[in-house]
Length: 221
Image (tube, rainbow, N blue to C red; front, top):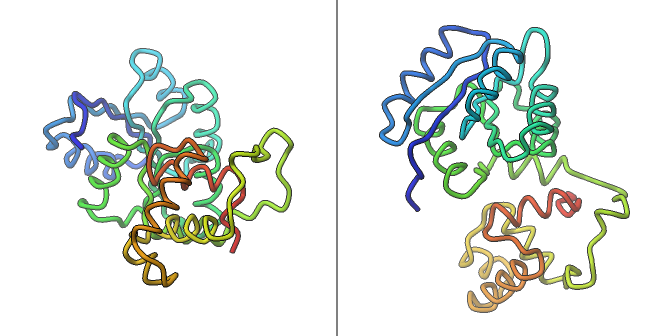
């Protein structure tokens, strides 16, 4: 799927050298039209008021307000803003916290240039980018013992035990052939379950299935 262009990107990070390195990488991409920089939330809000970026690269650790507070405020104002978190913190609790808030991907600050570009293009084309690290964190960390009534599954969203198994494996990043081998069923059967999951959840793709599973507490270890 082609990346839509032109793309406007904003950076929120208080380290000039890191921002300059990101800018150098991003400006070389053919679909990127502009890269704006901010060091504080007020600066970023001023940029957003002028033109909402297509993607925000957000530092998790800020000197005044942390990344979680920034993401919560921004997504309250701009629910469709696509945020990719860049962080020194790799513990499950940070990843799950930010994904639950609605960010689209989470990368460590020591990610490679290729990993950054893959995340950016994934978010631009599908709306989310799930790395194996994110999937593992969600599987281990997003345990919701009780959901509010508003989040309960309706009748058509109830899953059979086999559909639940397939959903869990999809969220682990498994391909249809791998799931078939793991469950000792045919690939066609897996694809049938996969399609049924998409229909029941209304998800357009794998990323949507993961988001649905996260929101409804279905990724319990």
